[in-house]
Length: 487
RNA sequence: GGCUCCGUCGUCUAGUGGCCUAGGACUCUGGCUUCUCAAGCCAGCUACGAGGGUUCGAAUCCCUUCGGAGCUACCA
Image (cartoon, rainbow, N blue to C red; front, side, top):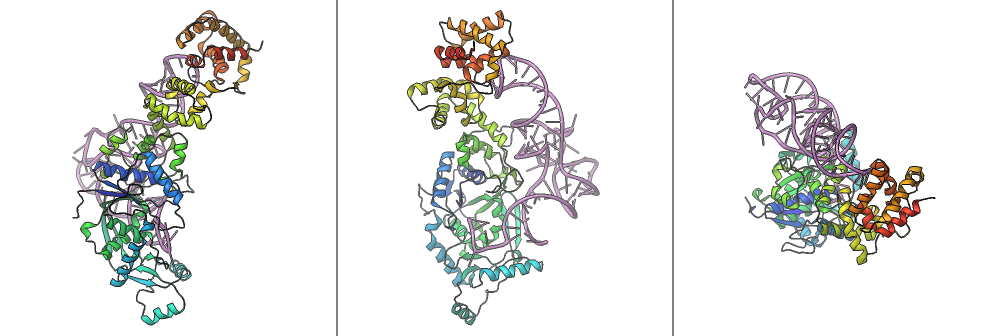
């Protein structure tokens, strides 16, 4: 057995777009496993397909991981002794290995064109044969090679898949077996010499001394190819990394999450007011469970509890409702200063406040009364807007409710009584209004306070009325009540 | 089509032969509380895909079947 006492896990996305929940769930598990075992997390960018991977996406991936708090020990920005960690900067390494495979006869040049390959594939399908490379160029004679070259053909490098089978033990699924009959010779490098995933991933995992590969289930069937490269590299079986193929995170329609299928980038969740800890907590529950009934866990607890043994093998559907529930829990668990820090950007961005100290003081005072009322941070601007608007106006839909006779009566009485108040705190306001409206007028509280709520906050849904009036201040509260009175 | 993986409430899951008339969470429904909305509390709905075995006893073991997904690229 290779030295697996020092766990080295890697998260190796191919940033062809913003990281989405599936990617992040994998990153989270990689991270949790590395931290749980006191191992190292290696962050590697698989950008061998430069047509699809852009620098913007790479940077976005880095930012997203940082925002989530999933820190890495080796990789972009932090370096490490096995770098570089961008595959596009390791091209010479792959080329060397590919040449070595060629020299040893493990790989060979294939001159078939894409059209020819496709044609033969169709034929195979038609004849009910397993589609895949048929080995046409496996044992070309020198004259044949010369002919191809003379014809101007370019060659890809193809790995020779020996007869037999590949058996390995997946840490989540147990023993998995692939007969090579169904694993055709695969391309290691394009005609221009650039490497493909199958080459780069295997070479890097070996060179970077990766001990555990936790990755998506979609890569399960590419594992025999990866193992084939290990063999060609001369890596003894005892030194292969341990594979653990994580179940999918699926969208609503039961298919793997993808761009076409509800794939939503983590950036989206960030913009919509989800906390990183809520996202991580929820994602941790997709395919893994702590074992007991406790589901609301911190990152620290996740690290303590996470084991691969407790990872499920069946796919999980993404459920926004549950994410929201957890997000609400996390928001409620925030300290006042934490909540303030999260809230401020949303308020400034929505232009509810500009950021003056007076405004921030008011926000600070108002946050406690809305903390248990929101599910996402993005709801904050709408909830506190009534405290900051310059041109206050009652919601058009609510307006008619203020015109009713009963409502007008309530407003008039409230205006008169509140004007006399000297202590403008919510307890005093409540006391005087209850006395006037409930005791003396005999109104039902929900009826009485509804009109007032609309007049003061503009909507029948608002933070608690008396606290809201206190925060608004006497002058503005009375002005709003007054302007709601029509006669 | 072939290969591979997967199959417990609507969803995420607990469950590794008796603790299971299947537990928890989210959703949903009803109620309590209540100045609205929330939060909180209480209650309810609802599941072992199907069929055969093995066993005194099966969600748990075996077989068959059905269903779903992934792969089948000079993508990753």
